[in-house]
Length: 130
Image (cartoon, rainbow, N blue to C red):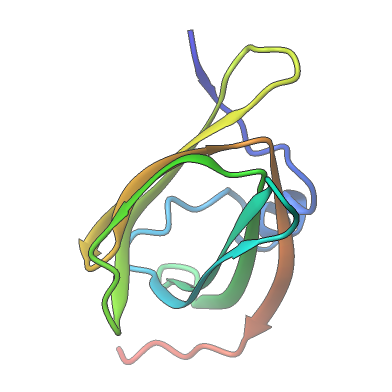
């Protein structure tokens, strides 16, 4: 059985700020990059702008997924908004992560990877419009 796991490198910075690991509902993807880092290893980078309006908190979060395989991504538009980013760690040894990107608008898809790291975390002053 699979389980959700947010204990990858630097994820605690996001959890400490928001008090939880976000599903990234209504978060805007400000950058999407897929690159080949070596002969057979690919990485995928998502830069996400996430707002928790209940807490009046906003952050830009950069997440890198390493050694990406089984990539199936669709609908990459100029603007992309997430409904949910699902990260499930399987029980293989070494473990792999199954990633599902559910989009509100634009990007959606899935892939697997061997490693995940929060490579950027920047908080931004946020004032609710209410």
